[in-house]
Image (tube, rainbow, N blue to C red; front, side, top):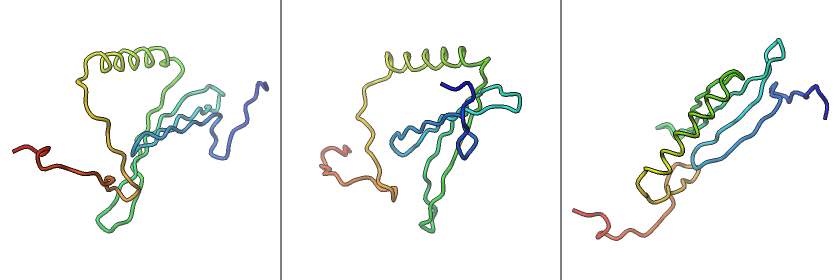
Length: 113
């Protein structure tokens, strides 16, 4: 493998996208002018306006090499806590591109009083 990684069109050295329900997460490895690598994590969520048009809401964090170990440690602890302590709930229902939930049968008895 070459020591020099090729940048793609957006300037990323590596890019991985993960679709998760209504969100997509992007993990992008970039380099500074001094050739120091860092990671950007972007959450992208499709939003629909009242006019029916959609846009993407994005949130981004920058993670630098010196913080990787502590970040991963904290993330793993938080995920382990959730897995051990969170109450069991029904899996989220996937939404279609227009923002509406798929059809399902609902019994009035299920709605409670």
